[in-house]
Amino acid sequence: MPPNIIVQVRLRRDRSLLANPFTQALGFMKNLIAIFLIFLAGCSNEADSDKRYTTLLTGTWSSEYTYDDGAIKSYGEKTYHQDGSATGFISDQRLVADQYLEFRRQEYSSQWKIENGVVVITNVKFTPQIEDSDAVVIRDQILEINAYQARFKAFSDGSTFIRYRVKDEP
Image: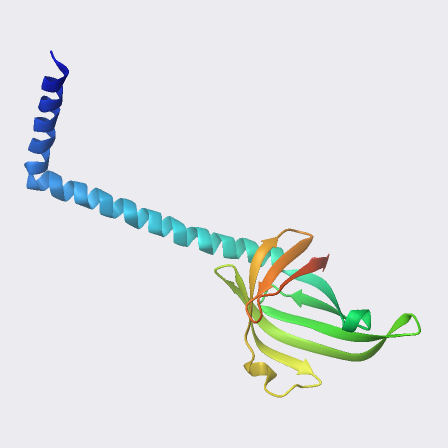
């Protein structure tokens, strides 16, 4: 048989299937179900990622920053508890005669959760209290995280920063 006849037969078969309303509805439903399953899988992956991030982030982390060409250093530790609470401190130190001396220390507590790969920190309370600090909402995108370090991007100014694990929460 010449090739063009085979093509014509296939076209006729396909046209006859498409002409059947039941077959058209069935094909539409299959496509709709496939799209729904893909959407559902995407949602499931985000929820699974958030659970994995929550597990990895639970524990104590530290970070350190220097300002004013090294004249001031801030060191902090933050513990993310399994119940969604967090506690920590920030120690500001000034360079005096080749050594850093603490001139300010603030302890704080907050609530935390992870939504779509973003750490959302709310209900921040400092000691001594900073006015309206409990109205602050901090959002940091998790760029990467493992058992030893976590890299974030702050929504507030776009800066990136790294925290290092100090210890796991029991």
